[in-house]
Length: 252
Image (cartoon, rainbow, N blue to C red; front, side, top):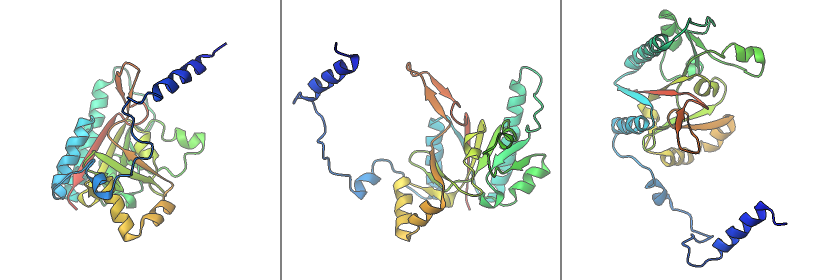
């Protein structure tokens, strides 16, 4: 008796044997460096790249703001946290769940963030910066389970796609950009690149790429909020990561 699997494979073989179908050659030559750079790119100075990054992120359901200094970025962070907290309180339909984590921010270590005095600034306005060290135990996970806000810097940001590159390492826990419902990324202009290829070429030319790969536990490319869709393409945000992503881009 012919199985369903055999029937499917048989149909595939018949289709692949047809010479009139425009399949690409099995050994297609790789793209050259210049060809790769034209696939996704952006032009202009760092502020132009910031504008392009923001536009791409907005198309992906993210939000952003472009600022002129680190001081403005620090203030924008406080304002964004306050606005998000107010939004959640306004949308709440029942009594608040007292978890003790309502005003906590899951974050990279302060020395890893591109804005100085973040921890002190947040403490002054009633927020607590929480830097996860090890989430291997149930107790450590319970300690951050209900934190709604995440804060990170970036290793690089790519204007052509609105993507950020973050590495997991000591002081840069991936949980800060993965677990909370809302994620804020601090992006200095100096970390902006036209595209991933430009960043990679820079690291290769500097000879720092092997060291970066050895020192980092993992690399993550994040492009907007987490998105999932069912078979009918009904889009849902926030299933496998943050539902809200906000980028604060600033001149440094």
